[in-house]
Image (cartoon, rainbow, N blue to C red):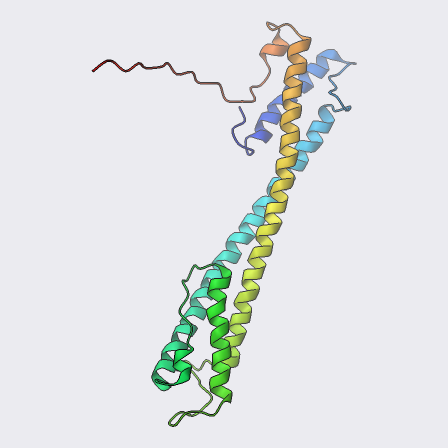
Length: 231
């Protein structure tokens, strides 16, 4: 198997380690040791660490997926609450300064700040409506038709802010582990290349040791140039 992506690397290294094991057995009591006293046990150790990091990444990815799903549901809920608040103010407080201060509805999938800001403006406006002298014909506090109050709406907004923060943290943690894995994968790629070069330089090109080296990279596809015929 050749290495096309980082996910292919473990399988390629398993084959290389098998080759290395067989060659060490032939050379016993000698063995192949690369620079820095890097032998087969060290590559096995690093491969195990690489697989462990991949598992951690999978766990982070699942958590990220779940957090995003939960956040989407929270977005729908709080946006519907904002919609109800806006129309309630337009209907019950039509023509007042409160109507003019209403925020615009955000896009459901907007980034955090564009989504949160209208909600926070609504929290502040709702407080004003409840605490300032009410206009004629209106009795404070404002309670939506579904029973939602200003304190409960404010809790929803705080909750979705926490959900955004949790997802951001999860993304940062996953990115950190991915960078760590890429660094280790790069080291393993270099060691695999070094092993190939050492074996190729130590044995004849026609030897079983060289011919049985596992392929690391996809074979180069050479395409013939097609000359366009004159019109």
